[in-house]
Amino acid sequence: MSNRQILQAMSGLMAGMFVAILAGTVVSNALPRIIADLGASQSSYTWVVTAELLAMTATVPLWGKLSDLYNQKLLLQLSLGMFVVGSLLAGFSHDVGLLIFSRVAQGIGAGGLTALAQVVMAAIIPPRRLGKYAGIFGAVFAVGTVAGPLIGGVLVDTSWLGWRWCFFIGVPFALLAIVLLQRTLKLPTTRREAKIDFLGAFLIVAGVCAILIWVSLAGNQFAWASWQTAALTGGGAVLLVAAVVVEMRVPEPIIPLGIFRNPTVSLTTLASLLVGVAMFGGTVFLSQYFQVSLGKSPTIAGLMSLPMILGLLVSSTVVGQIISATGRWKIYLIVGAVFMAVGLGLLSTIGADTHFGLLSVYMAVMGIGVGMLMQNLVLAAQNDVPAAELGAATSVLSFFRSMGGTIGTSVLGAILANRVASEMTKGLQEAGVPAGAAQGGGHGVPDMTTLPAPMREIVEHAYGVATGDLFLVATPFAVLALIAVFFIKEKPLKDTSGMERLAEESDSVGGAKSAAVG
Image (cartoon, rainbow, N blue to C red; front, side, top):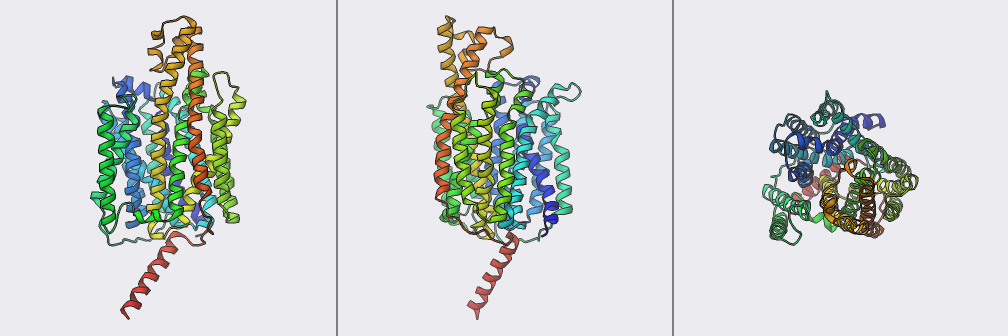
């Protein structure tokens, strides 16, 4: 395919990815208003966020496997259709139960888009040329990440629109993506005769959901050491062990365990998990730091994350072009992991009085590292697996990155809450104020506009110290990711697309069978 044909085919993919990213970020500033309007509880607040993430993470491997068996274009359109249905249900919700159900539907659709977009790219673009197009996807990721909270804030604050439009706004983009895919994406309809392993799919989804529900709610809805923890972790472990047993015995497993015999796949998967913990776990709390510790509005807080997004945007685009031009990729994984670790280490020094100029440099350093790492880990894995396993390998990396992000966010969130509580108790004691005077000593997020100046200073300091500690906890995960990518063996990037490789593999298998018959 020519560059023009590839860009035309990618237009629908990029619109779809933008929708998936927007769905996860646009509601962040709107959730307090949504929960208040629906008369829901704090636990419902958690579930509105968690439901989409659970559904997306748990279904990514299934979408990846389906892409190896059925028409990828149709699956992409199906996932977009699922997203549209979920968005419309969410926008018209009048009770929190329907809203949570609709978020599950959105999450299933977003899981398909997350897995399939990169699979389709690998199918139509040779690894040697894939770098620069992966850089464009990094740019879409950056724009969707920074635009989501800003759009959400504007919609909620506009009286004639309101929070329901946070869900409706993605619908036209999704419908546009369906039309663009139909017109521009030309993929051969290849269907392999195979049965889907529904038992394995059920066991994987159930086991992953049990673990993710535990890490999402432990420390908030129940104690880390409690019967709920024992039930969820024990049940999740049993389900996942059963899934492994099933996957080893069926002819077409959802996750072919044999791909982990490939050192490149194993190491890129481990690195993706660690990047998810370090990146999502650390940065998701930056917006809260900007608003609570630095006293900024939600809109300004969204704009303050621009240095990190710009760092990601520039590094993913530039490095993608360089990789396509030179064919060398491992050095950029190593440099990216170094930048991410250094960025997290620098961010661990922040506090309530950190100058924004210094903070911008720290965020940019981290963004540059993440931009070099995320897409190129996928590129390294896709380059080193048979074309018939492209979907499985790609979805495994996406799955573990999402899993790492969910675990990191939940665990670091619990650490943040405890650190804030202890710092506020300490500050209140030094000021001679009873510890319960600041909304439970830090277990709830205080409304900064209602606090007197001395109390506000204590809260700002507590959140500044706690956020710095979060980045300190996240830094070792980035160092471990650096060690993992160091051991990845660099192999020359292939010059043939996934479709061409699949045809070659089919021909060689057919030739081998003919020779055996002869």
